[in-house]
Length: 116
Image 1: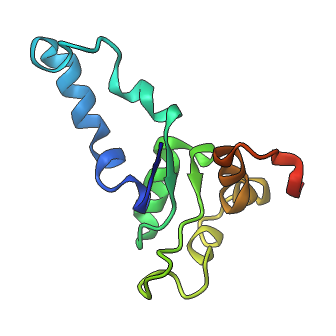
Image 2: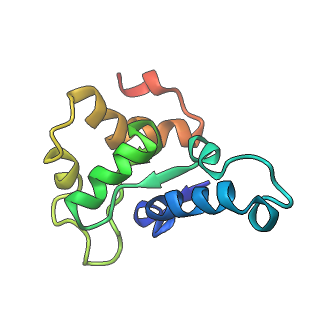
């Protein structure tokens, strides 16, 4: 599953969702006994969030292995230089490459070594 725009509000509310799961399992965990945070490693998120603090939070929450380059194409509101926000995050070269193309290749089921 891939979510556009950094997953919208989902990654930013996972703490509240998890809190409800833990505090009121009688209401929240009636059909599912798995902590909602455990689902994050099964999801992918694009990086287009328009705010460096939001991108930092997304990467800290889901990791570079679940974050891929987002551009907002074909709409004109995205980054004028795709990936500029990622480049400004202070990530290692390997982390940047993972976000620029590695995560998308994995999501598409293509070999990661294709661009290595």
